[in-house]
Amino acid sequence: MDQQTEQDKLESIATPGVLDKYQNAGKIVNVVLEKVIAKIQPDADIASICAFGDQEINGELQKVYNKKNIEKGLAFPTTISVNQICGHYSPLKSENSNLAKGDVAKIQLGVHIDGFIAIAAHTVVVGEDQVEGQKADVILAAYQSVQALYRSIKPGTTNTALTKLIQQIADDHKCTPLEGVLSHEVKRHFIDGNKVIINRETQEQRVDEEEIQVNDVFVLDVYITTGDGKTKESDLRTTVYKRALDRQYQLKTKHGRAFMQEVYEKYPSLCFSLRAFEDEITAKLAVQECAKHELLNPYPILISPNSIVAQFTITVAVLANSTIQISGLKLDETKFKSAHDLNDPALKELLKLPMDKDSQKKRHQEQKQKA
Image (cartoon, rainbow, N blue to C red; front, side):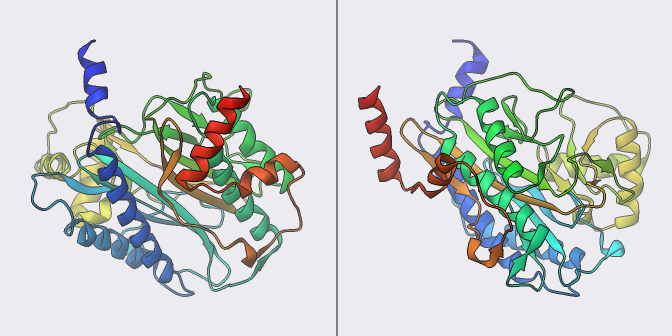
């Protein structure tokens, strides 16, 4: 067994204590996500809510694993992206913008404990309890897609089969999966592992077919739009970055070196927002120098023009006889009235399947007997 394979084995959810770290990270994600959603109100300031989300994550992390020297922190900063903005909107204090009644707001955030990552995203409509029309269509399409993935991802399932589920559900709701989105397998300290599920397959965008394996951990990330599925980069400032682990360069400016030193210490491998740095002006200057020399990977803010985009993200762990949801919130589908319904009875039955461990184990045994 080579060194990398041995390392993967040590960091697998089969290793005692690892799944607990994923699950504790997931619990914090869900607690903070609910707190952030409670602040999604008309006229609320997006920058302030994002800062609140990050502060709450750090506060919750102080309650766990304190007796051991374990690294803990954000895996992805709090972002709130509305309407046609696809994601990654996490504005600086000086770039505040306000929510409006009727906005379709996508909230995303992530946590890691000892490098083991949990991420979730949820979509809400600002100031509206009952939702109809295209907003209901796109939100239900995204939520039902991620739920179908959760109920289908298991050892032996192919990533291409999962992509087809997203397309089928989006088609039934007269919506379109967003191009350029990947659900990644996550590994310790790595938010974007090599094994992926593409949100929408096109002639230009395809991935190699792979089977899901026992002990895989995936961040299932689904984006659906009322538009044509294409995106373009917005003119909004990119504030979310991740260190490029394979790049090294000795920066020339003092503020650039100080900025990167803080990145090394606080965010050695996972994502952060420029909002986390006290001196906003210096951070904006430093990040330009770092980006020029490719020391950081940017998460640009994309838009799906003249459309509404919905996102749901959950983190799951694939075991031999069941799949565990580590993070992600339920949606009360009764509050959304879509003009469309799923056409495939088998798909409807899939979404009704209970996902408690005993029910999954029973289904697994029944399938083995039939085989």
